[in-house]
Image 1 (cartoon, rainbow, N blue to C red):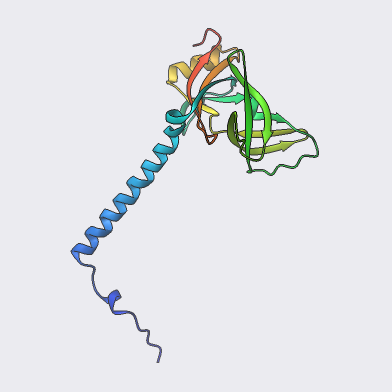
Image 2: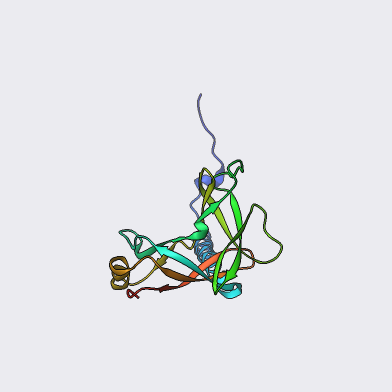
Length: 182
């Protein structure tokens, strides 16, 4: 005899009230996820310090994400001692210092600094004597016409207005070409 017994609640059809509660909870969960994502992206703008970073635009088009300028900052390539060991994907903190209105690399830390302006990133690649990092500000979206103009006419010089939250999370909010393209 191979008979399986199932709990009684599996034999009953869910009631109208149970379905309504399930739908409301599903809707609430989806809205909560969207709110958390939105707040995470605007928090640096609301609570952060404004800094200007020098950048070099690279490629402004993607079939899936639309028109944007992929940005390459000086702080994306960090010189390190060859024997220093960083792991790909690990969190790093880059202390910044202002010089003539532009913020530049000062120190690389694996622990959150207690003072000063710093930006939080992740190690993406390690070469001999250089750590490549990303900070979540490597793309700036713009209208199609402007992105194409930047691609065709830009001499490779630009500045990006960035807000850095007290926890080091950054958000790019403005792009300024230093050539005739913008």
